[in-house]
Length: 83
Length: 431
Image 1 (spheres, helix red, strand yellow):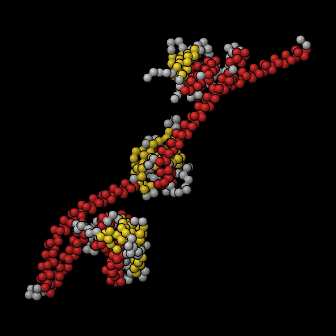
Image 2: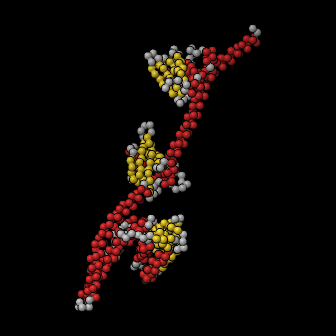
């Protein structure tokens, strides 16, 4: 079956907290409907280690599923609404 | 710029600074709630901060958090209701008990079986509520689990005259300390009763076959002994000396006693097929009383009769007569050797739904509690040797069972005994 979920990529490499969190929250708010319907997921690229703690914490409280993957020079945080 | 203008500008600048500080403080407060660091003034100057609108972002995020919380609460409520329904309707008793043996929670099944109506159980000691005791039993599985921290698998325990198979599991806190016990129990009272009846039925069948076989084999030689001895006694030509005639009479008498015992054994094995017909129960009772009237009068026993009308049962009249005779005889014999003026046997019949009930009670000395459970067993007797073989009540029990009825006994030492048997009613006719 074809995967119809769109990836909204948010590249915030170079930013540090709390800006990382605020930008992510702003993106979650702007795309709330698509994310809630699970037609899209938010993929965040960050090189700020603290963000791998603050962003998942806030996203989980909002009901998103979170996956953190360590890439070569950054972290990839995927936020996806649980159906 | 005039002096007033300068004054106003300074005032506005001060207000703006105060407002920016207020916004930064509030944003920092909200960020700390979100679990992150405060704003760095060098990274985010005042103008960028106001442009970013962090309060707006966080407020909308809180809206999502609240919505998620509401949804989570709704799902939790549904799950809790479902769990409660399962907890209450599952066919086993479940109890949660704390380390002081106090009830934290229990399901409806547990309350139905072991808790009196309108009794509050939460916070009460489980051994008081469930077992009716003032301390836990030595074999209590909950005590063992609390002491060892290990589950106890399937232990049979008696609570308030009911039998339960119990499994207990420990409840532990995050440090592994035992804080309570979950006790799950299944009521096996009826199962045990059925097993006991099954064992008794098997025993009765085996004894019945054996007794029937032996009785048949003994009947003929005994008949010959009685016959030849009687012939000899009647033979006037035999010239028997009086002392030998007396001995011959003893032989006949003892052989007849043996024959009576054999008759009992044959009745017990019931090798004759019951012949069912519509029977007027009250007539059988009256007839049986007449049969025993002589003995009743001799022992000066008062008979109280209270017979309901229209009692018809589908039964073998000879066998039901035997049951009534045996029970009545038992009551009469209960007064043997007792010199009292208020000796009473009461006989009552009644109808309840589709069952006809017969109660035969006496105010004799009663049956000791320890022998009551074996009273319907074959060859069970408290009478002296030669006075009875202990088959009467066993025969009654077998007959009633064959008639799809039930029989039970109630007795209290010093107050008397009551036998109650029921038979299925077949129609409403005048009895």
